[in-house]
Image (tube, rainbow, N blue to C red; front, side, top):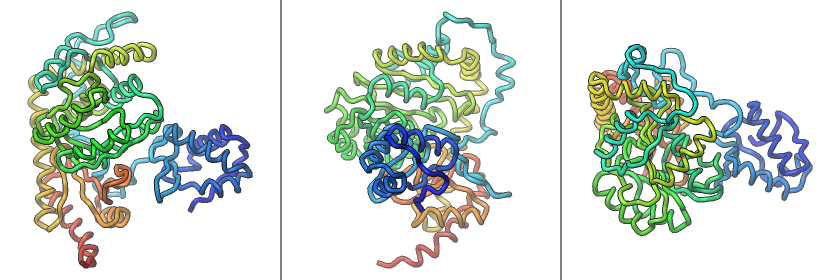
Length: 443
């Protein structure tokens, strides 16, 4: 259904159309995913020319408010950078929510105890933006992983760091190679910055080298990839795939390469980085999954020019990431008990992920999940499978938000809190839901 029944457009210019549709999104009158009429139909309903409508929609695409895709027309983006926060998946009473990608709260450190222990001195304007001890500790961790981390800064989470790197190096209209399926919030972020997405198909080992080469040939000026714990599929680079991708990148020394190591130590896999020897690069290492999402802190490493630009732009805005947060992260990172907890968490997440994959395999169902907190399960049709699982007490995430061009319908299941008995029940329910569809296939 595409009619704009909630209101009537009164705009007589492209700018007016942009303002009215943005206001409709902000008010909730047009919800994420809502399909819009064709250009000609919208022009007729609004009483303006098709050229005016086309110009307005082009500006809304540039801002990331709408998305136009082949055979799907134009729709409101899933995460438009205007208006209300996207509503979470509804969770029926008594159901297990496996849709949000959260870590297990039982495997996060006690922040209250850490706050009581941490020295929290008063810091004023004009002081250094980063705690030197925190930077040196992060540098040591990254160097041990093969990252040339001479220049670092602190940002407000991995996505904040990625956005600042892109703004420091790219312009609206530039093309960025991204994983497909990939992180939905990253897609929204790129669209909101006026950047064009170049999807690159992935498998269990990450980006396909041929796909990356093709995206670069189509004009991609940057590539963003997840070296381990890829969201949503759990893909992780191994030494062979990292070597193949590096060979592609060596042919393009000017390309900006950004790695999002959002899981860090709890990914359950060693890091295989592509950054050595690059002239334009960055990597963000978040503490969200290991220490707690509400800390909103990541360490960003990169080439000297990129980090200098990020620091300078940060000083023009917020100035610095709270030293209270930095001191708290330093306290946690230097606590041997927290280090042991992080190791246990990584092991537990790996066990829980593998257990569900194995339980599904025993029932003839293949799922992906090399590392991280999620598994990716290709299904015949997303909405029906999700609805059937919700009726059985399981809420999972639809794959549509994570898919661009080349990937099949799927669901994402967060396994971070899934105990053994629950894995078996869930596998049974998934098998029961999928069995009619599998039985109906021929050829």
